[in-house]
Length: 338
Image 1 (cartoon, rainbow, N blue to C red):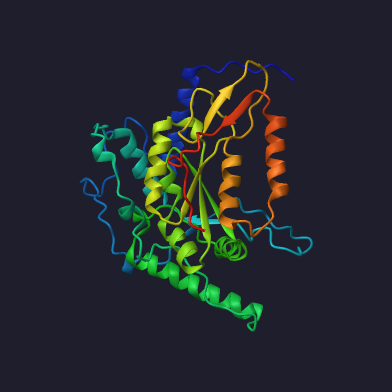
Image 2 (cartoon, rainbow, N blue to C red):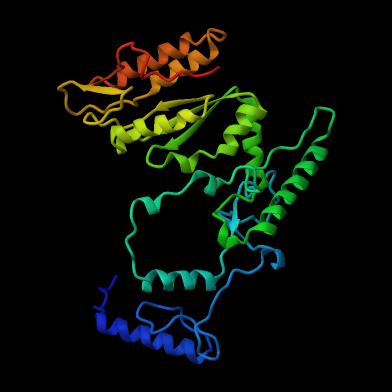
């Protein structure tokens, strides 16, 4: 293969200029770039204002399909590979272009730490149309087609209520594929205990109160909140989050990490390191999670096999680390209502 000819920065700049000129000759305006003198304007030269449009006057929302697989044209498939394709609201090129321009030109103004606080009620708005869609009532006397038709009608009304009261600019990305929500409904129905795994750096973003209320109040089941990646935050922050989630009376909170840091620890999880190098630590929090599950069942289910496997895995995979729990004072342990 012949050696490539060197291409200088000056030649690259000229190539881009010629490319822009060809686009202008074809009537295609290039996208706004850094250094542009002004944002997009109207025909009279004044700056264009984008007031929020009335959501009730909007047309149908355009949906973007992510990770969609091409279908072969030769033979039909026995299954639909795009059944669980992610569906989100697609932003127009104008919206993306304007936001890119504002990000490049708008100055950054520091705000106090108090100004960055956001209320959970303002984000999730419990009791509004933004709550999660619940599966319609059904029984075994109904056929599969009847159940699916009822679910499709309910989900269509759910989306219609949301977009009739909120514009896409006011909403964050949320799944609009009914099949994804059906998977959640099935899991909630067949499970006895639900584990909700959150990131310890911002667990509130992964803990919708409407989901907690639906599981505890409507389904009458137990929820265990797993604070994952506790090794990435200071112990004081982990303890503060545990105290915060104590406001949910039927919620059990467990700290967990797959890569424990011996220099960090929480009030309920401490690490003692032996002087052995080259050994990988095992996950911290598995025993605590087992004790929580065991306390919920209260001896109704035999978990001896699970206990032996958890203890054996910690012995085999963690020769350099030992998980130490605090003294049995009862102050730091979580109390879970079964």
